[in-house]
Image (cartoon, rainbow, N blue to C red; front, side, top):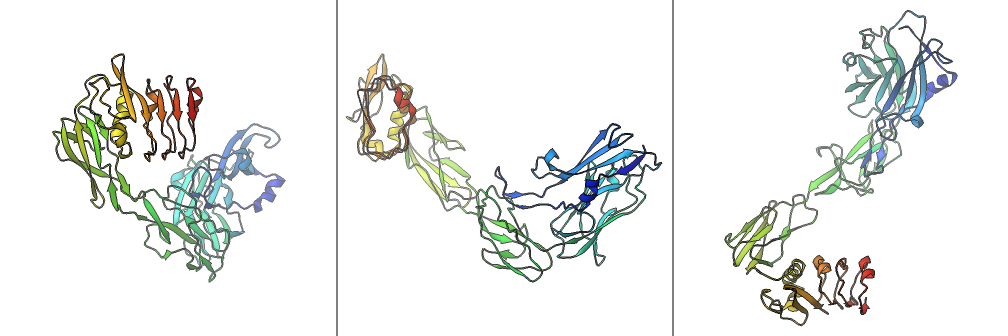
Length: 484
């Protein structure tokens, strides 16, 4: 195919356009730092027409500013046309570079890009055929990549302040038809002042500080605080360092940074948070044949390693899984020990296995009673409840009452004023025979949804700290008295 390059008048003016990589702190969607925009070039074949009399190729160029890995219409800042012509030459050539020829004040963290008129053989675009040198002839270290019709040189370190650079693309670079460019393409640009760039360095969330100022050699700047609330789960923020692995120069909030001859990159420093202790419920009652889970509380809550191990002192009474699930085997008592992997801190829970309730107790009623037995503030409410094999279902308390309904033990009344109760069992919303519920003058902050309270006539929730009430209260149509 024969080619010639055709420019619009606006394209001639666009030669002065600056395509500089942008950086900074925190985009939306939880990004911790905004990556540099990538130069994209789309190649579209066009039919014969006003732009190219014999047809050709339209090349749209711009930066992927919204980071969606494609060039959107509103991101196109330059368009060029390579038309089918009568020139016998079919050598590939460079149609655009970033930075542009003779561009000045180029950001020091920029990447250098070149757009070709056609697909190239990527194996011929290397760090020996695509090079960058400073005004003293020193080669700039970096990596070279190629995709589509765009080649990119990424410097290993930020460029130096106010220095002229030469970008060279060798004549030996070939297209995918093994045809070489057959000319050396060179451009020159001059770098600008230094920036102070902050990197999240593996943060889970938050945003990096942004310093939009630029500095000359010898100028000073103050290191920023963690203004964007960067955090990394299980670690503690501990200032900044000039190396990602923490082996460079440490910079704390307010410390002075003196600009040498290039931009300064500061990486967030993350340190391990050691475990200081662990706690678990100090006692628990489980019916024989049933299971309950022990939940450890590792302190501090932001400790790096929350792993624990479990051990039962008498496995013939109860066993415990690696997840803290205790299964009652036989009546008796055992001690369940939890131990942290970090620091080997321990705590214990005395587990008592009670006789199995062999008949009569409804599932929700059993769950509510077991909840009460395993929460100290409820202890006085349930008295000496032991089993459901009696007419009173074994509940011997004026605060919690029950009866046999159709051969099944059901809770009918709960009246627990002033016991410093902080929570209600979720299953309380499934008690089918509950007629009276009073939890006045306690410390409740929420109330479970009422699902089957069709027999509830009396509901008293006053003098608590309830933040919001469940919508299901409005469906309790049989209430005779109610206060909150």
